[in-house]
Amino acid sequence: MTDALRASLYATDLLRRRGKHPAGRPEGTAPREIRAVGVAGAGLMAGQLALLLARSLRVPVTMRDLDDERARRGLAAVHDQVDRLRTQGRLDAGGATALKDLLRVTTDLADLRGCDLVVEAVFEELDVKRQVLAELEDVVGPTAVLATNTSALSVTDMAAGIEHPERVVGLHFFNPVAQMPLVEVVRADRTDDVTYATAFAVAQACRKTPVAVADAPGFVVNRLLVRLLGEVLGALEEGTTVADADRALTGMGLPMGPFQLLQLVGPAVAEHVLVTLRHELGARYADSPGLARVVREGRAFVVFEGRPSASSPVDPAVGELFGSRPVPRPLDAAGLADRVRRALAEETGLLLDDGVVADAGDVDLAMILGAGWPLHNGGLTPYLDRTGAAEAVTGRRFHEAGVASLPR
Image (cartoon, rainbow, N blue to C red; front, top):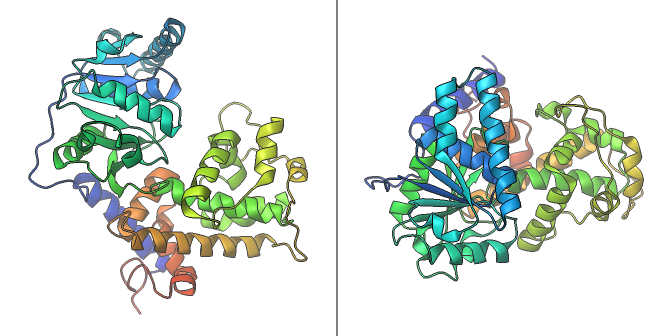
């Protein structure tokens, strides 16, 4: 019996129980029947969502984009994904044909009129998403659910200008949509029970594990991952070397290091979310002129050859873009690891205090399924308990001894 064993048992039990019976789903409320789905957008994320929803719900799915060329490219990309499924033996010829028949594309907003659910997957800009929801409300029926796939923006703010904000909900699928098992189901200030129950039902029909989250900046996974990455980038600005920063988090057991993750997400996307969360949550989210330079100069932390890999080496020369706030004694790898643990303990405590999720188990479920946090650590919060970061920062453990660790 070890802490690692107890943490693994805790995490495995958590995945089983909440996978079958997700916490936060409205009890006794029937979801709406979904007979047709619309997707606002026809880009990469929109296409992945359209394919998943058509394959899972077995209903017609119509993508809508602004012009014929974008619409044509979007449908062609989805058809290519269906062809790959057939080549891999995951669909037979009849199944591939039937799936393609369910997938449509249009430039006419009116073609979404009969949809019971519309998911917007357009550019991650609040005003753009707000406009899309307002346009959709003028077209779809009075009971249609309007969902947003935003990864960090306020669902409440998006819905503020429409007549029926109670039917707006967040359905944050993670990229790549087919593989990632988590969906953050975001309840805005005025989301009603039927809409929220429908969002849970859709996520489960897609064989995803839904986690109920309140409408707060970054929700859970992005809020914590961006805080982690912000601490790494902040250390680089203070003079920590790329080599030290690259190996600092090895002991956490994450599926890839911070620089591979930054490159996989995309430096421009990472900068946008970091700036957004700094604006929303304050200066504990680092200001990184170096990251802005990486984006502006088109540099890369890592060059992936083929598929993204955790073993892809980091370009040490990227460090020359950082160092805007040098300190006399920059952190080494061990010092940065401790700083990241403390930052994660602080952020976890804050999101629990703010009621973003119901309990620490929701944090662990989200981080295991959405960020690949290892089972042998029990997810994030048992790891922070075991390393002492939780008590050092918040003055308390996230779990009583014996829940995800050895009894006292």
